Length: 459
Ligand code: UDX
Figure 1: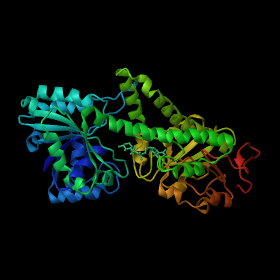
Figure 2: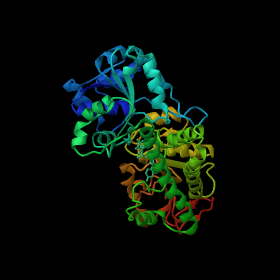
Figure 3: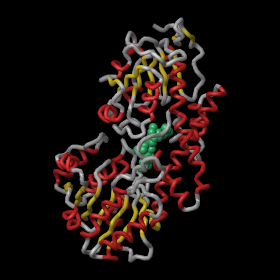
Figure 4: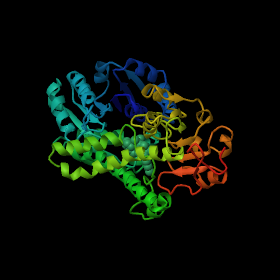
């Protein structure tokens, strides 16, 4: 089959490469010439494990090509995916649909034969129906151009695998149409359906809502455990052990009960806000009031981390030196959009700390967003002379750090585990004071003469 994919960010580039991997002929389209040139030469403009190999394999086979020409795209296929971004509007909760509208407004006038525009972007419910009217109004083929919705559930860092082996394929269609969109999408995803991936057919608003509801649920689950984490801290309990015990209940499950610095990235935070805004427009604002709390619990994690860091350096950040390990919003990604790690690093600096950040993949993006922070080229270099080391993103490289690696590097053996991913006992046994969000603080912390907290064996 043939299809096009408009937008070549995380979502679009992955979808284009993976549809080619399934054996289809794919044309990726973007208005950004630089991005298209990179992708056409086999270079992925962001970090995503496994994507470069998939991209190159399919470029070599000739199944995958890239263009900036909408006319070429309109002539190439009758199935057009929309994979452009829907960021949060500036200063408002709602989603900014300008990129989605721009694609439809430029593509539809070129559609002179029956075609299906398939949305993959996360949008406010009702967008698909609105785009259907917009597209058929602009297209020479008129009503023969229809809109379907096929939300994407991929996670950054696992994008290829999530696209080729998703938990489900959700397809929303207009039930008053003749079934062409469903037939085309069943054909496109035939390999997945054969591999018993559930193919769930819905109407348009349900498909749009499945996506935002899934993200709202995941965000709620994370904020739930983080709220419990606050109680654990107050009561001297341990949220990790608690989450393990909860997770054994098959109705709850252990995944997404990872307490710590909370969620960030380009999806969960802005999606729950856009969901609240849309519910308000629909007169259902009370229904999603709880998401406000989910959002504020999540943002509070970041200030809690700063408070913990303040205690860790002995009561005042002013004049302290802090290493922040991690900048990406999660491991295996170079994405720093709404990154808790960088947010915390920025707050520490505002409180007067000298902050040095290191991340295995997100340094360039971090420098662009937070040019005033200091950056190191290795984790060890970031920890040089530190009064406290903060782990903010749980990269494997940081999980496998040995206390001995930092001997003679840090000023005080104090570590703050924002992702609860280190073996606390190992660090304590090596004479470190170990702090974590969601646990009682170490009993062995004490203040030195300058007011800084050091371990009994601290250097
Ligand atoms: C999310 C959804 O998972 C995906 O289905 C959707 O398509 C896009 O949004 P993504 O943003 O890539 O994907 O990351 P995800 O792995 O879901 O993590 C989101 C955030 O939650 C990260 O900041 C992560 O660190 C945090 N998180 C995740 C926790 O704090 N605790 C957990 O237990 C799990």
